[in-house]
Amino acid sequence: MAAPHLAPEPATARRTAAALAPVLLVYAATVAPAFLLGPWWGLAAVAALLAAAAVLCRTMDRWVLWAAGARPVGADEEPELHAVVERLCLSSGLPKPRVAVSAAREPNAFAAGSGPGSAVVCVTEGLRERLGPAELAAVLGHEMAHVAGRDVLAGCVAAFPTLCAGLVLDGWALLWRGGPLGALAAVLLAPLAAVAALLYGAGTLAAMALSRRRELRADEAGTLLTGRPGDLAEALAKISARPGGKAGAGPGAGPAGRRTLRPVSTLCVVPAALTASHPPVADRRARLLTVARRLAAGA
Image (cartoon, rainbow, N blue to C red; front, side, top):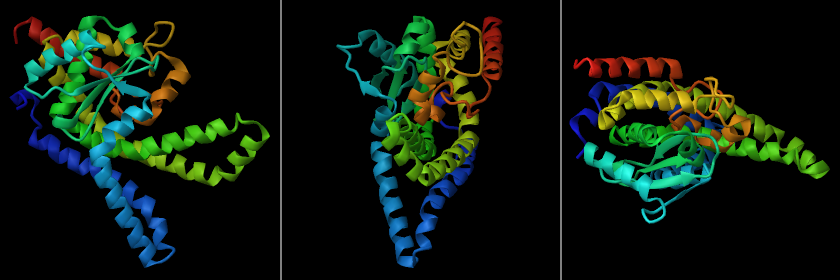
Protein backbone atom coordinates (compact mmCIF):
# COMPACT_ATOMS: atom_id res chain seq x y z
CA MET A 1 0.00 0.00 0.00
CA ALA A 2 1.33 3.44 -0.95
CA ALA A 3 2.30 5.87 1.78
CA PRO A 4 -0.55 8.27 2.70
CA HIS A 5 1.26 11.35 1.36
CA LEU A 6 1.50 9.67 -2.05
CA ALA A 7 -2.15 8.61 -2.30
CA PRO A 8 -4.21 10.40 -4.96
CA GLU A 9 -6.17 13.35 -3.59
CA PRO A 10 -9.92 13.43 -4.38
CA ALA A 11 -9.57 16.91 -5.87
CA THR A 12 -6.68 15.76 -8.04
CA ALA A 13 -8.68 12.74 -9.19
CA ARG A 14 -11.57 15.01 -10.19
CA ARG A 15 -9.26 17.33 -12.10
CA THR A 16 -7.71 14.34 -13.86
CA ALA A 17 -11.15 13.07 -14.92
CA ALA A 18 -12.08 16.54 -16.21
CA ALA A 19 -8.78 16.90 -18.06
CA LEU A 20 -9.28 13.52 -19.76
CA ALA A 21 -12.47 14.82 -21.45
CA PRO A 22 -10.53 16.63 -24.24
CA VAL A 23 -8.41 13.51 -24.67
CA LEU A 24 -11.54 11.44 -25.23
CA LEU A 25 -12.65 13.99 -27.83
CA VAL A 26 -9.37 13.41 -29.67
CA TYR A 27 -10.08 9.68 -29.69
CA ALA A 28 -13.64 10.34 -30.91
CA ALA A 29 -12.31 12.53 -33.71
CA THR A 30 -10.25 9.62 -35.02
CA VAL A 31 -13.35 7.51 -35.66
CA ALA A 32 -15.76 10.28 -36.72
CA PRO A 33 -14.75 10.13 -40.43
CA ALA A 34 -15.88 6.48 -40.53
CA PHE A 35 -19.49 7.58 -40.01
CA LEU A 36 -19.28 9.46 -43.31
CA LEU A 37 -19.10 6.06 -45.00
CA GLY A 38 -22.26 4.89 -43.24
CA PRO A 39 -23.53 4.00 -39.75
CA TRP A 40 -22.22 0.45 -39.83
CA TRP A 41 -18.74 1.64 -40.73
CA GLY A 42 -18.94 4.14 -37.88
CA LEU A 43 -20.05 1.50 -35.36
CA ALA A 44 -17.29 -0.81 -36.56
CA ALA A 45 -14.77 1.99 -36.01
CA VAL A 46 -16.11 2.60 -32.49
CA ALA A 47 -15.89 -1.13 -31.70
CA ALA A 48 -12.33 -1.20 -33.04
CA LEU A 49 -11.46 1.83 -30.92
CA LEU A 50 -12.86 0.23 -27.77
CA ALA A 51 -10.97 -2.99 -28.47
CA ALA A 52 -7.80 -0.99 -29.07
CA ALA A 53 -8.37 0.88 -25.81
CA ALA A 54 -8.65 -2.40 -23.90
CA VAL A 55 -5.43 -3.66 -25.47
CA LEU A 56 -3.80 -0.29 -24.85
CA CYS A 57 -4.47 -0.44 -21.12
CA ARG A 58 -2.67 -3.80 -20.92
CA THR A 59 0.21 -3.12 -23.28
CA MET A 60 0.86 0.64 -23.13
CA ASP A 61 4.08 0.17 -21.18
CA ARG A 62 5.52 -1.93 -24.02
CA TRP A 63 4.39 0.59 -26.63
CA VAL A 64 6.05 3.41 -24.73
CA LEU A 65 9.32 1.55 -24.23
CA TRP A 66 9.41 0.61 -27.90
CA ALA A 67 8.72 4.19 -29.00
CA ALA A 68 11.48 5.48 -26.71
CA GLY A 69 14.00 2.88 -27.84
CA ALA A 70 14.16 1.52 -24.29
CA ARG A 71 14.56 -1.98 -22.91
CA PRO A 72 13.94 -3.54 -19.48
CA VAL A 73 17.08 -4.28 -17.46
CA GLY A 74 17.51 -6.74 -14.60
CA ALA A 75 19.18 -6.22 -11.24
CA ASP A 76 22.19 -8.24 -12.40
CA GLU A 77 22.70 -5.87 -15.33
CA GLU A 78 22.02 -2.57 -13.53
CA PRO A 79 22.44 -3.23 -9.78
CA GLU A 80 22.87 0.43 -8.78
CA LEU A 81 19.77 1.57 -10.63
CA HIS A 82 17.71 -1.24 -9.11
CA ALA A 83 19.06 -0.43 -5.64
CA VAL A 84 17.81 3.17 -5.94
CA VAL A 85 14.36 2.00 -7.04
CA GLU A 86 14.20 -0.54 -4.21
CA ARG A 87 15.01 2.15 -1.62
CA LEU A 88 12.27 4.35 -3.02
CA CYS A 89 9.82 1.42 -2.86
CA LEU A 90 10.63 0.94 0.83
CA SER A 91 9.89 4.63 1.45
CA SER A 92 6.71 4.66 -0.61
CA GLY A 93 5.23 1.25 0.17
CA LEU A 94 4.81 0.59 -3.55
CA PRO A 95 5.51 -2.69 -5.32
CA LYS A 96 8.75 -2.53 -7.24
CA PRO A 97 8.19 -1.46 -10.85
CA ARG A 98 10.18 -2.82 -13.73
CA VAL A 99 13.26 -0.79 -14.60
CA ALA A 100 14.22 0.16 -18.14
CA VAL A 101 17.00 2.11 -19.82
CA SER A 102 16.82 4.05 -23.10
CA ALA A 103 19.94 4.55 -25.19
CA ALA A 104 18.84 8.13 -25.92
CA ARG A 105 21.54 10.74 -25.28
CA GLU A 106 18.93 13.22 -24.11
CA PRO A 107 18.77 13.39 -20.30
CA ASN A 108 15.24 12.39 -19.30
CA ALA A 109 13.07 9.85 -17.49
CA PHE A 110 9.46 8.69 -17.53
CA ALA A 111 7.06 6.15 -16.05
CA ALA A 112 4.43 4.12 -17.90
CA GLY A 113 1.96 1.32 -17.27
CA SER A 114 -1.62 0.78 -16.18
CA GLY A 115 -1.03 1.03 -12.42
CA PRO A 116 1.42 0.37 -9.57
CA GLY A 117 1.36 -3.37 -10.20
CA SER A 118 2.36 -3.10 -13.86
CA ALA A 119 4.44 0.08 -13.92
CA VAL A 120 7.84 0.60 -15.46
CA VAL A 121 10.25 3.47 -14.80
CA CYS A 122 12.77 4.36 -17.47
CA VAL A 123 15.86 6.55 -17.52
CA THR A 124 17.99 7.50 -20.48
CA GLU A 125 21.72 7.02 -20.75
CA GLY A 126 21.99 10.78 -21.12
CA LEU A 127 20.32 11.27 -17.74
CA ARG A 128 22.67 8.89 -15.99
CA GLU A 129 25.68 10.64 -17.49
CA ARG A 130 24.50 14.12 -16.51
CA LEU A 131 23.16 13.58 -12.97
CA GLY A 132 24.82 12.56 -9.75
CA PRO A 133 23.44 9.70 -7.59
CA ALA A 134 21.33 11.96 -5.34
CA GLU A 135 19.86 13.83 -8.30
CA LEU A 136 19.08 10.58 -10.13
CA ALA A 137 17.30 9.30 -7.01
CA ALA A 138 15.27 12.53 -6.89
CA VAL A 139 14.16 12.11 -10.51
CA LEU A 140 13.19 8.48 -9.89
CA GLY A 141 11.29 9.63 -6.79
CA HIS A 142 9.32 11.97 -9.04
CA GLU A 143 8.47 9.07 -11.35
CA MET A 144 7.53 6.85 -8.40
CA ALA A 145 5.13 9.58 -7.25
CA HIS A 146 3.46 9.36 -10.67
CA VAL A 147 3.11 5.60 -10.18
CA ALA A 148 1.65 6.03 -6.67
CA GLY A 149 -0.80 8.68 -7.87
CA ARG A 150 -1.92 6.40 -10.73
CA ASP A 151 -0.91 9.11 -13.15
CA VAL A 152 0.78 6.56 -15.38
CA LEU A 153 -2.44 5.19 -16.88
CA ALA A 154 -4.03 8.60 -17.39
CA GLY A 155 -0.78 9.92 -18.79
CA CYS A 156 -0.40 7.01 -21.19
CA VAL A 157 -4.00 7.31 -22.41
CA ALA A 158 -3.40 11.02 -23.02
CA ALA A 159 -0.04 10.41 -24.68
CA PHE A 160 -1.15 7.64 -27.05
CA PRO A 161 -2.55 9.94 -29.81
CA THR A 162 0.66 11.99 -29.85
CA LEU A 163 2.74 8.80 -29.70
CA CYS A 164 1.08 7.37 -32.83
CA ALA A 165 1.04 10.71 -34.66
CA GLY A 166 4.67 11.37 -33.75
CA LEU A 167 5.75 8.02 -35.17
CA VAL A 168 3.85 8.72 -38.40
CA LEU A 169 5.45 12.16 -38.73
CA ASP A 170 8.92 10.76 -38.05
CA GLY A 171 8.43 8.10 -40.72
CA TRP A 172 7.09 10.67 -43.19
CA ALA A 173 10.11 12.91 -42.57
CA LEU A 174 12.46 9.99 -43.25
CA LEU A 175 10.85 9.45 -46.64
CA TRP A 176 12.22 12.78 -47.84
CA ARG A 177 15.73 11.42 -47.33
CA GLY A 178 15.08 8.35 -49.46
CA GLY A 179 15.87 9.86 -52.85
CA PRO A 180 13.36 10.50 -55.67
CA LEU A 181 11.19 7.49 -54.81
CA GLY A 182 11.09 8.46 -51.16
CA ALA A 183 10.17 12.03 -52.01
CA LEU A 184 7.38 10.79 -54.30
CA ALA A 185 6.03 8.57 -51.51
CA ALA A 186 6.20 11.53 -49.11
CA VAL A 187 4.16 13.66 -51.51
CA LEU A 188 1.54 10.92 -51.90
CA LEU A 189 1.34 10.49 -48.13
CA ALA A 190 1.16 14.22 -47.42
CA PRO A 191 -2.58 14.07 -46.53
CA LEU A 192 -1.84 11.36 -43.95
CA ALA A 193 0.99 13.49 -42.54
CA ALA A 194 -1.36 16.47 -42.33
CA VAL A 195 -3.89 14.43 -40.36
CA ALA A 196 -1.11 13.15 -38.11
CA ALA A 197 0.08 16.71 -37.51
CA LEU A 198 -3.43 17.77 -36.51
CA LEU A 199 -3.75 14.74 -34.23
CA TYR A 200 -0.35 15.46 -32.70
CA GLY A 201 -1.32 19.05 -31.97
CA ALA A 202 -4.74 18.16 -30.56
CA GLY A 203 -3.30 15.34 -28.46
CA THR A 204 -0.58 17.59 -27.09
CA LEU A 205 -3.07 20.32 -26.13
CA ALA A 206 -5.29 17.76 -24.40
CA ALA A 207 -2.32 16.23 -22.58
CA MET A 208 -1.19 19.69 -21.44
CA ALA A 209 -4.38 20.14 -19.46
CA LEU A 210 -3.75 16.83 -17.74
CA SER A 211 -0.03 16.97 -17.14
CA ARG A 212 0.60 20.41 -15.67
CA ARG A 213 -1.04 19.85 -12.29
CA ARG A 214 0.17 16.29 -11.89
CA GLU A 215 3.78 17.29 -12.61
CA LEU A 216 3.74 19.80 -9.75
CA ARG A 217 2.18 17.23 -7.44
CA ALA A 218 4.74 14.58 -8.42
CA ASP A 219 7.56 17.06 -7.79
CA GLU A 220 6.36 17.67 -4.24
CA ALA A 221 5.32 14.11 -3.41
CA GLY A 222 8.46 12.61 -4.93
CA THR A 223 10.76 14.76 -2.82
CA LEU A 224 9.09 13.39 0.31
CA LEU A 225 10.59 10.01 -0.60
CA THR A 226 14.13 11.40 -0.55
CA GLY A 227 13.69 14.32 1.84
CA ARG A 228 15.89 16.44 -0.47
CA PRO A 229 13.80 18.72 -2.72
CA GLY A 230 16.94 20.65 -3.65
CA ASP A 231 18.27 17.58 -5.45
CA LEU A 232 15.26 17.50 -7.77
CA ALA A 233 15.54 21.25 -8.35
CA GLU A 234 19.18 20.80 -9.36
CA ALA A 235 18.30 17.80 -11.54
CA LEU A 236 15.64 19.78 -13.40
CA ALA A 237 18.15 22.55 -14.06
CA LYS A 238 20.68 20.07 -15.47
CA ILE A 239 18.10 18.24 -17.58
CA SER A 240 16.80 21.46 -19.13
CA ALA A 241 20.26 22.94 -19.73
CA ARG A 242 21.36 23.43 -23.30
CA PRO A 243 24.59 21.86 -24.60
CA GLY A 244 26.70 24.85 -23.58
CA GLY A 245 25.52 24.53 -20.01
CA LYS A 246 23.06 27.43 -20.19
CA ALA A 247 19.58 26.69 -18.85
CA GLY A 248 16.95 26.77 -21.53
CA ALA A 249 13.53 25.53 -22.46
CA GLY A 250 14.57 22.16 -23.80
CA PRO A 251 16.79 19.22 -22.94
CA GLY A 252 20.44 19.44 -23.68
CA ALA A 253 20.86 16.75 -26.30
CA GLY A 254 19.66 19.05 -29.08
CA PRO A 255 17.09 18.38 -31.84
CA ALA A 256 18.29 14.83 -32.51
CA GLY A 257 17.88 13.91 -28.86
CA ARG A 258 14.44 15.48 -28.67
CA ARG A 259 13.28 13.50 -31.69
CA THR A 260 14.17 10.24 -29.94
CA LEU A 261 11.73 10.84 -27.10
CA ARG A 262 9.25 13.10 -28.88
CA PRO A 263 6.52 10.41 -29.09
CA VAL A 264 6.56 10.08 -25.26
CA SER A 265 7.31 13.72 -24.49
CA THR A 266 4.26 14.28 -22.30
CA LEU A 267 5.36 11.42 -20.02
CA CYS A 268 8.91 12.74 -19.49
CA VAL A 269 10.07 14.55 -16.36
CA VAL A 270 10.96 17.47 -18.66
CA PRO A 271 9.15 17.59 -22.03
CA ALA A 272 11.23 16.28 -24.92
CA ALA A 273 9.27 18.35 -27.45
CA LEU A 274 9.20 22.11 -27.85
CA THR A 275 5.54 22.25 -26.80
CA ALA A 276 4.98 23.37 -23.21
CA SER A 277 3.17 20.28 -21.93
CA HIS A 278 4.68 20.78 -18.44
CA PRO A 279 4.89 23.78 -16.12
CA PRO A 280 8.00 25.92 -16.75
CA VAL A 281 11.13 24.44 -15.19
CA ALA A 282 11.82 27.76 -13.46
CA ASP A 283 8.46 27.62 -11.68
CA ARG A 284 8.98 24.01 -10.65
CA ARG A 285 12.44 24.77 -9.29
CA ALA A 286 11.17 27.79 -7.36
CA ARG A 287 8.50 25.66 -5.65
CA LEU A 288 11.02 22.96 -4.80
CA LEU A 289 13.54 25.44 -3.40
CA THR A 290 10.80 26.94 -1.25
CA VAL A 291 10.07 23.48 0.16
CA ALA A 292 13.80 22.95 0.74
CA ARG A 293 14.05 26.20 2.72
CA ARG A 294 11.06 25.20 4.84
CA LEU A 295 12.59 21.83 5.60
CA ALA A 296 15.90 23.47 6.48
CA ALA A 297 14.10 25.84 8.86
CA GLY A 298 12.28 22.92 10.48
CA ALA A 299 8.85 24.10 9.27
